[in-house]
Length: 236
Length: 242
Image 1 (cartoon, rainbow over the protein chains, first blue to last red):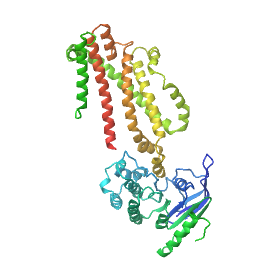
Image 2 (image 1 turned 135 degrees about the horizontal axis):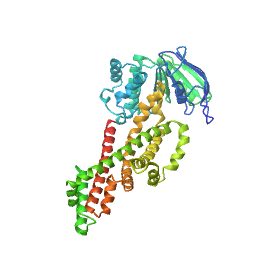
Image 3 (image 1 turned 30 degrees about the vertical axis):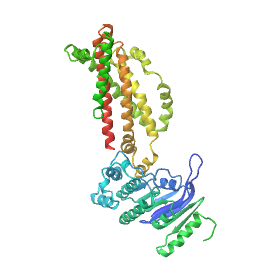
């Protein structure tokens, strides 16, 4: 389980993206993080991913302090962070290379097939469409078999048709390995579709909601999210 | 023309040269045929040792410029403290015409190869440092994110990200700087030496042997084209990988 307690971050320019943030994510579950721009969603992921150093608070994973050296963290940034000097195959394999983990051809094939990347393996990422790049970035993180999966708006740059395909492929591959996941999104529908839990970040306050399993209750959750984010203060 | 642009360019330049010499009818501009006849004659063999001396100086100067400039550029682009200490000094020295250092180098290192190699090094090293530093500083931070989250060491970040990202610009800068270095080499070889194509050209001019002088210019030009094309070839090979 990922457990974050009283996390605060402040930058040298005086900006405080968030303070006293607490939440938890059960193992093999997805927490979707939603909120307006500038409230620190990316900063939160970067803090969990070791890019920003922890200032106050605690972050533990399965009762150990979360560490990029101890835990495998798969991070998919907004721009996907692919390396154009490597082929798609080498991009996918780079995580295991860095962590000195032996390659697993069967898993690689499963993920590559899962994301429909088999025809693209020898190409440079710069010759791929946005949707293809996004699938490569996801495949790279999945192939690492991460303990913690951090996704920063992975679907936001995709058009509606590509997005629907990407959603299905993500569902398919995620359900095979089920890494504990934080998925930052701007879309209420994505937040409800993927999140077992939903963390709503507002200016200075945070609400963690549980996503009901029953489809008929999802509409109510969507309405609650709309109230929290779009019409704060207006009752449903 | 489209299929063989080089052949086309060579033929046009030789054609203009030949036409000029035919119209001028002056020993100052001998016909290309006479110059080629000298280059491929037994007497022309004397240019071999001069060519080797020039190539040695050029290669040593360029390689030492790369060996110093590239790591320094990587360091300045990566670490703020060396950047704050050294970058203002580099910014001050970079615009100074490097040829003005030749007398100083000759006084310091004598009349051997060292001042000439040092001068080429000076030509190469500044653009390499500045271009590499700037490129590292402009790298998209998102490229670092997945690797840092994976716990990549500093060495791994350099090996997997910073070095491959800066190689194309390094090759491009080397190609352009080498052309400048070659023209500076000519100047450096005109003083205090009895070897090198620069010396050969100036010596031929003083002996009023314009055929040999043009043969030297031709050879220096070929050396420039070959070094330019050589780096261009490596650059294309590298980019094709991408």
